[in-house]
Length: 253
Image 1: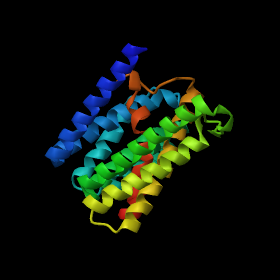
Image 2 (image 1 turned 30 degrees about the vertical axis):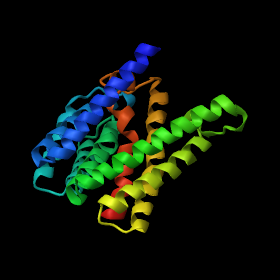
Image 3 (image 1 turned 90 degrees about the horizontal axis):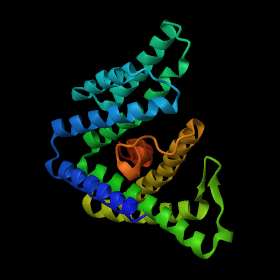
């Protein structure tokens, strides 16, 4: 138990350090390389969740992501989805679900990169702080209530029975407040825009978490991968951020 907790803390610290370096340097080519790596790992982890093993799909996603060097990542993403869907139909593939990894997680990775490119590094930090606060508050609230007043807990969704309505509400409230406070200070937006974007990011983050749990339950796996040790896979850590990025783009772009 202690070893597991220690490993989680170490991995979390390393992730924070790596993200801090990314924020401080804020280099386009470094950002592009990191997001390309994120895309590859996320796609690789998603294939078993959809019952697929076609690794060439990762290469296809990476090729289209390279268009983000000279295109808005959202345009690159839409081009990818249209051409992949058309290609699947053209060859009359018996596996129409080949499109699924491009919808998730590839499309959200493109959206996250678009948020960085179009709105700046401070907005990416805003998203991460908002979603991380929401996740932590939801987890802490659920744990406390489970220990002290388990009878009042209500499951949020059959997709993830361990997540409670009370925890999700606590996460959205605290995450929205912290996100709005950060954006009001560091990002050039009004408080109401900051609050609206933060609320949407938290709510979408909850759905992202639920969607990832839904996929894992369908595949009967505990984690999407093992690359982050006790934290599981990349999708386990980025599911809420992926969905939250789309919500924040809706408000800011």
